[in-house]
Length: 280
Image 1 (cartoon, rainbow, N blue to C red):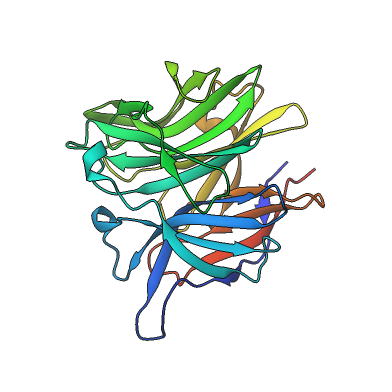
Image 2: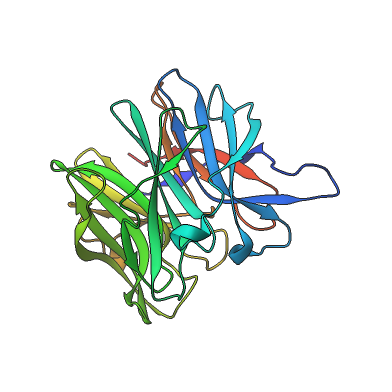
């Protein structure tokens, strides 16, 4: 079994003009209650300047493949909440509300904040009064939330310790989407370091009794590894089942049954989409 993707096609370019190029980086794609698709993601003018990414791009479309229409930016960083920038949003819907988790940075790389904003329509947002949801390092970021065994699970990019060490994917859990606890390590890379590493942009998919972990390795920049496990609590490097030429990938399961995967990043010219093949 090998997880693969087809050819990627550009579906959205955030650039205001041919002479002023912008990028999309880590992002989220979600369908709202009336069927409209939303993309919310990191954006900035080229060249890349991640610590100056101060608001999220927002675009909408009738289908994940487009056509995507630019909307007003959302969630400008809130210095009063201790945010230094806004990175890597992930949106989920619970009943009639949308929960968008994102990295708000922090005063030091060892104390990055995972924040929560609430919305009724994905156009207007209110930061939750219980922020931060959690604080971790080194530059803990890229939250992704899913439901399993009666609890909400959040995975995010972290390190063996807030000061560095092995690059990891960490997990916390919650019953109410606000109070998070019981941190555990669910994936450890053999690579050590700080900052960007081989465990960025984690994304978990439960399918046919298996749990798949997608992570951006950054070696090379456009590279996403796929690992499989029997539980969502422990993936191993030796259980890799895919290597896809994508950066900061999101997995989309469309209502018509299609499985899709995105790609984006600095210097790539926007957001790209491909069909995902599970190999079975």
